[in-house]
Amino acid sequence: MSKELVFGHKNPDTDAISCAIEYAYLANKLGDDVEAVALGKTNNETNYVLKRFNVKAPRVITKAKPEVDSVVLVDHNEAIQSVSDIADVTVSGVIDHHKINFTSAQPLFYRAEPIGCCSTIIYKMYLENNIEIPSNIAGLMLSSIISDTLLLKSPTTTDDERNAVPALAKIAGVSDYEAYGVEMLKAGSDVDSRTAEDILEGDAKSFDMGGKSVRIGQVNTVDLDDVFKRQDELENTMKSLIKKNSYDLFLLLATDVLTSDSELLVLGEGTEAVETAFNHKLSNNRMTLPGVVSRKKQVVPPLTKVLS
Amino acid sequence: MSKELVFGHKNPDTDAISCAIEYAYLANKLGDDVEAVALGKTNNETNYVLKRFNVKAPRVITKAKPEVDSVVLVDHNEAIQSVSDIADVTVSGVIDHHKINFTSAQPLFYRAEPIGCCSTIIYKMYLENNIEIPSNIAGLMLSSIISDTLLLKSPTTTDDERNAVPALAKIAGVSDYEAYGVEMLKAGSDVDSRTAEDILEGDAKSFDMGGKSVRIGQVNTVDLDDVFKRQDELENTMKSLIKKNSYDLFLLLATDVLTSDSELLVLGEGTEAVETAFNHKLSNNRMTLPGVVSRKKQVVPPLTKVLS
Image (cartoon, rainbow over the protein chains, first blue to last red):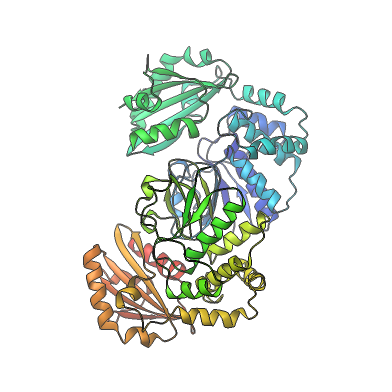
């Protein structure tokens, strides 16, 4: 088989970067020729993880076709979140845990499970294929699960994650995964050092909801004030991003990783759809969403329902 | 978990019917409440298989929502091939081996592999979950693989099928699977007793190819003359089906199951796309396709490419 590239979504988070590395190692062990790459630079949290487990960040690509004919998608499936020339290559495999919006001209390997973290699926694939998990790969898997589930507190968390975390912590040599997790989440939530555009766009994803172009960013913090003391600056940057990219709606979900609550900042056309979706009124373009931490499970589905 | 229905595609073939029965048995063993149903009556081949292994045909449904909120799709994923009210229910799982054209509002369990038969995937799921395969379920799996791969001769056949067949034959108590397979394929290819509409529509699937509505039927036979001695009758019925359902193109792939060659009959608008796709000229609305037996692998992809 000729060489393939594997990558997670644009604006990569810890799971997107880790899944690519984890998958490439597994596929190469099973006899394929696969290189892990990324569709963007690594964020602060991921940098902390890569340094902790002594793993090199994958190189960043903007196009796949100049290098390969065939790619594997991890932690995403929608073209809008994938490499810019995805239509020009064959997708030979998808491993994901998101809603599906996918079309292919040929049968392919597709594995999705409605669980908290894509790295959990790849962890299961190592077990099913009897491939020993190296310590640093276990560290990436552990960190991804902590990141995606906010230390197993997100409603997306399943028994698969709860079972995987202690097993992976042991292989990775992490004696207290809760303490490690808090340090890791804190490392990823240093808002003060980030530009407004990075806060908005650093973990943003685009969604087509009933013909509307909806951009949803998420920022983790240990203090929501660190985000909203800069509300004017954030709104100005949001407005220019909306204009530049013709978004209909822009949502920023600011999540307190210690309390597991969020504050939503919303600009654009038709913000009443957001009010309907969450059954709250916006005040000063904001609403408080207690207990909401998951864009995928708690923000995208109700908004898709209202807009479709 | 509340009750779910599982079903294969419309115009069910042996694999579509068997997968539903196989999946329901597995899911119920694992603690779910799942009933196998069908989206149409069983064909001659499937009737032969069900009688041979003493299994009752699933009841036929036309709508899902009156009975359940949630369904599992086997051996298909495209809405156009599924239950009429598929948009009104949640798809909680898909197990399939076809190209993908699927959208969901929520994450779900999705397992697709680019292999010869969907029953092979479910066979692997029994093994992975350590569920013992009853003799009659093994008979259905064996028959589905023989049916989908024309006794392991179709180019869709993979090592998964080649490994599964002898193992399943043993469990099913079939001492000579080749002899059984020829009898089964013959039982499904009695063209003389079938109406023209049944030959055209009995195993037909609809495809959206670049905005064109393309209907592709397939009929297995042990003598292509049995089909084409009725060409006038078939063309007249094709024309009225095209008119009634606003198809752009209608293809009938008549496959000789003993020689593994096919003859294509084509009517509709823009038949030159078919000529381009297969690099052959139509003569008397027909072309010979030596070695072509797989609609999925040898007909749909080249035609999709030309029309998209």
